[in-house]
Image 1 (tube, rainbow, N blue to C red):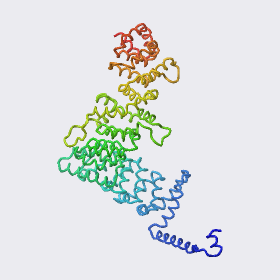
Image 2: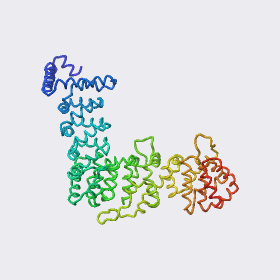
Image 3: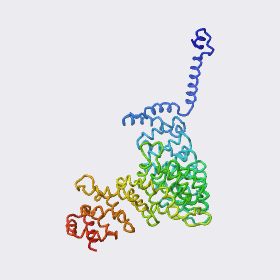
Image 4: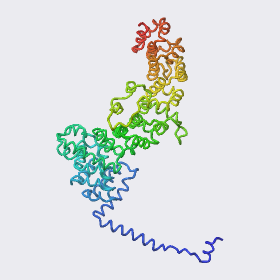
Length: 579
């Protein structure tokens, strides 16, 4: 028998039994006190009854008829009392549910009751529990233009203070995310100071800091606007508002009109939060700017902030541009290799199914991530920029030499070669093993073409030629189009041949002709295949042999060109053959 059991059998239990009656009476007293406190509040009876209805209203199993009936009862209870009960942390949920589950007319009625007293909605937006009601109004009234106008009018004059308020900033974010820019133009104008918000007149389009500075009539107005925006930015930085889209947009507008020296001063307070800024296009532009004008130490801190997120950032619709810019302007290629390239060139730990090579294929086949490789693989600015649209070019254009600000010295060509040295083997191996899948997408075949152009090897040519040779005997009636007839794949083969037209040693074009010279008419049995054969005439070393092979087939090519409407490829081939 244990010591405890022995003590209990002898009546010697040293632990005193808990007085259950005292504990129960204490809990009952607390409940009574809570009820008494709640009963002293305004509209306590209506709130208690409304809370019971709220518990029923929020059930997911409710039918539309049941929701309509419950809403009628809730509206009867809270009508005329919304402003008071919205401030109570428990009763506020009832009004929120009424906005969420109510009809358009009921929402409008609740909103009218809130906004009839000027400043009420903006004050609710600063309160921890009440601000959720403002968020509900913004979310569920966004499609009603009349309600949108009422909400915008209610917030007029309060945006600068709410934008830097710990709770109110969430409401400001919701306004600019959910409402059309045209409707919120009046509110955005308040970010640029009292002068521009009070005397703006009719606002045309979406206002920006740059447009307001352009319309300023005196230097004092310009300085006032810059000072006002900087105050909002500094307060936002101190409260870590980096994830808000309105804050990122305002920050991008400030950087767009700032001198390089001012951007360099601002960079240290932003670089550690780069991963949060990359969530929007404006934020990515900010990171690209601070990478451009920041110090080497700032760039190192950006790399540290992005650790573990390189692949996901490259696949993001906006973030990839900031990473390209960071690599473009960082002299310390060893640091870039360790922090950026290693994440995409080696297998990721914790992912057993996805190897580093598969990740590399996914990146190379992506519209955004492929541009990271193309930027490094393309030999010069002219070749490089054809892969980017005008907006991307504006981000990636060379930085002018500004004394005391430009903090990188290495030649772009030398930096590019150093980075390619780290990537060469993995990129070549990836292309050899996955040539078939890379040919399926435009980004993929562009990367394949540039890898061939830079590091063309016999193994890579063999891998592509195996695909071409297997397509020779493929029947045109097959469900899957052959590589010569597929709209994307035929362009890839054609571009590889055109790429060889400027080379002294056209490896791929020569291999293509040597292995398929007896089957060139099988390649040209389709209009798209004819374009491929026509492109071989651009490669001077094989042109005489090509003319000799195809001269006897000229009549057949003419007959093929007359068969259907799609004959541009055959016409191009006939023109090349006769010239």
